Length: 430
Image 1 (cartoon, rainbow, N blue to C red):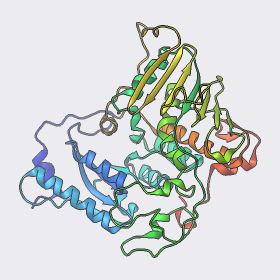
Image 2 (cartoon, rainbow, N blue to C red; image 1 turned 135 degrees about the horizontal axis):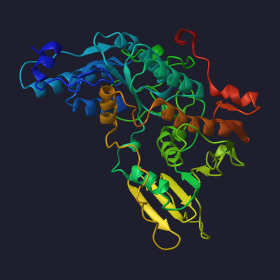
Image 3 (tube, helix red, strand yellow; image 1 turned 90 degrees about the horizontal axis):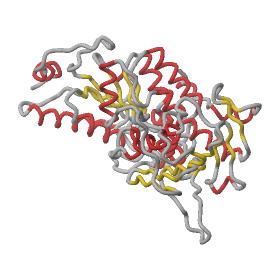
């Protein structure tokens, strides 16, 4: 039977090369723990299991069936790779705090519901663990700033799961470079095609299944009865609808918006800033048409696209950038340039280039070894999530808001500023 120790010994075939930045051996196994192994977490688990520089040593969830399933997946994969014996080197945990105390653990992947990102990130940073956390980074603005501060103090490698910066056939990366290098002139308007804002949870209670720690699933969120809509029974293969409810997520505006607003902020070079005004539509209840206005005059519009005289949308995509010389449509399966007159300007002799990364997980692992900053560090993830939070607040309050992106406060608006944080249940204050 192979143990973790013999597994590592068997795989160490190359001489050790140490990074001065991190003190780690470049070919030393990075030991990972997974906090949350639902649909998204299992996807990450499969991806990291395929990486030779990683060894998964611990898994955690609030549902016993998911813990058991993830443990079996890891041990079978490693046993198959070794081609002999039975691998038993994965420790299951029902409480992520116990996982963080796992001896020899280097890093964690957090793929919990949004309301459960903040506390694990803070405690993992305080424990000195490197972190890969799903997007949107938090459920409110105040949580994001605290994560940024804790990671800075801990000096760890942190990757926000905004993988459009690294993947999808480089369409988003190419689009950002085209904008940076003036292909469509000066950007005036950005249109983001994602779903609507969050709403209060009104689900009926159900009988809690055995093996599910419902109180732990709720965590810092308000107490309520169990719902399989929020936490499906057993091992599920769909994306649960907790995303729709403000107690746990930010609606589709934040779910996919955290991806697409992130690309817009990147293209506008606003990774460490944000809009100056939030202007909801005349009828906020329709859940689209809210505008974010930046200090440079650029207007970003949520889910509202320009139409021709027949009412047909002229240009629609995940991200639509409208400039003085043309329009750029960018999506996971789309990269289309529409010029007003002739061909775009060629790249300059010394073009501006984006951070080189073609794999989000690989970039994080490389930064753990090198000590360099990842392509989507917590400040960037926080600022992208903040756009989503500001949009949700704008729809809720239904009036124009002025935002100070430096102080991260609404200007002279006490009621709006109360929306920037939320009181956690007493047992989950950190």
